[in-house]
Image (cartoon, rainbow, N blue to C red; front, side, top):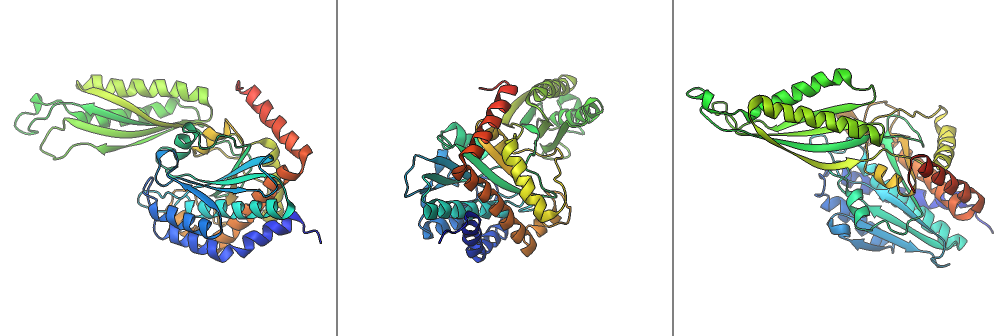
Length: 397
C-alpha cells in the first residue's frame, strides 16, 4: 500500500515528539553562550547517533559545530538537502530567541526527510548542520568559509517569532569593537594630566544618538560601553564600546558604516585619545526563495487562519547563506503571545508545550516543502528559476 509523503513526515516527527521535548528542555534549562554550547551539542549529537545517523564533530574549527548526514539507499545522485539547528543562548536571559526550539526543529526535519528518502527510494542526501554562535559572530559564516556547506542544493531552517512569514527580509548587520586609548591620572589631584578614554566612549555614544535623527526609518544603531574605567578616582586610559549598525540592504550598510566610523574618530579627536575599530562580523540580509516562501505561507496560513507578517527587524548569519544557496528561513509564531524576541517573556514562552507543538507543526511544513523539491521536478525548476532571477536582479552570479 502506498503511504502519502505527508503521512510519512507526520509519523516521523510525531513519533519523536517526546524525545524532542526532552532535548528542547535540556537545552533551554542549561543555556550556554556562543562557542560554549558543549552540553547542547552533546545532547543533540548523542540523540542523532542513537538513531543511526553519521555525525562529524568539530566542523570548521568550531568545537560545538557538527554535521549529521543521511545518504539515501537509492543513491546520492539526487538533491542534497540541508537543515540548520542553532542552540546558543543570550547573555542574561538564556533562550530568549528560542534556539532550543530551532535545535529540535532541525532534528525533526532531518528525521522526516530521511524517512521520505528511505521509504520512497528517493536518491540524494540530507544533512543537519549544527551551527553555533549565531548570537555572537556567526558560526554559519565560519562554516561556509571553510567549505562545510559545499554541495548543498537546498538549505532550510526555522525560527520562532511573534508572527510567521516565509519571506522574511532581515536587516544587514555590522558589529564593531571600538577602543579608545588615553592617559591615566589622579582624578582629583591632577586631572589635567590625564586623557580621558571614558569620556571618548561617552561622546561616541552621545553623538551616535544624535545621528539617529538623520537615519532612515529602517536603519538601526545600538551599542554599549563594555569598559569605561576601573576606579572613579582614576582618569581612565582605556575604554571599549561594542556597537552594531543595521540597514535593510547591503549598499546602505556601507553608507551607514562610513558615517559611524567618522563619529568614532571625532570622539578621539575631541578628547585627544587614539582609537582602534575592529569589525567583528557582518550579517547580510536574508533572501528567502519566493516560491518556497509562498508555499510555506500557504500551509502556515491554513493553520493560523491569518495572513503572514513580513516586517523588517533583526539579523541572522543565515542571511549570508541565503545569498549563496536556494534557501528558506521560515518564521513561525512562538506561542501566540506577541512578545518580541530577546525578552524574558520570550524565554519563558520558549519552554511551553504550546511552543513545542507549534515548532513541530512548522517543522512538518518545511519538511513537506523539502520533500516536494525532491519528488516534483516541475516545482524544483520553478524554485531554481526564482533563485536565478533574484541573483541576477541583485547583481550576483
